[in-house]
Image (cartoon, rainbow, N blue to C red; front, top):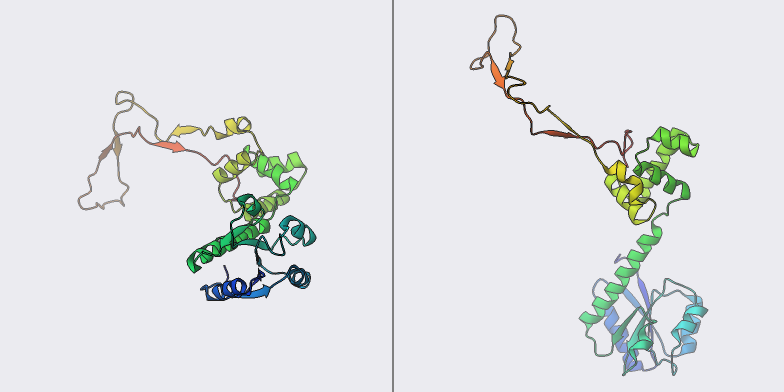
Length: 265
């Protein structure tokens, strides 16, 4: 939460003691930077909402007899407003389902702070999700081709694009998804049902080749090693011959077939 941003919080309650008391508590919450606006009637709430867009509306469910939140939301289609129920008496929990959060008159300042901070944190996460750019249909097609192991040229030929356009799309995909590895892109494609696991099963079978050919001592004897030195020179303490055993435990794993080009996602 950005502490430099002022939060406009409407407190809608007929009781001046409850209303003013909650407004005073909101001002005392550290790092909230709240500016409470007190309203005492449904008409005053309607007028304020028509002229301003508060961040949070804290309202008693019995405000004005009974506060019809679904109808109020329908009349004021501002999805950014969060609604908190101010519970001052016994009330059916089903009536609170339309609210984003609820606080009780007996809650202390720590509980109220935690609930408001949690609500604001959820709002920030929603904003981040909405800010994340969605993929175009063409970009989804390119992801499908990439995780199937196709090269940029093959993708360009399949989709009738230039290689430069394919590379640009792949860079945009990496920027939008913040995924920069073949494994991450493959997981994204599977989770979002862009490809079926059976479609890329062969691609995921990464071939392994021995880094050194496995041999037996009979087939390949010890290999003498002759250090290359200038004529007439010797290194102190360096034997003139070294016998090296052929290694048979190292494997070379080649996993560049998902991204054969130099473009990295």
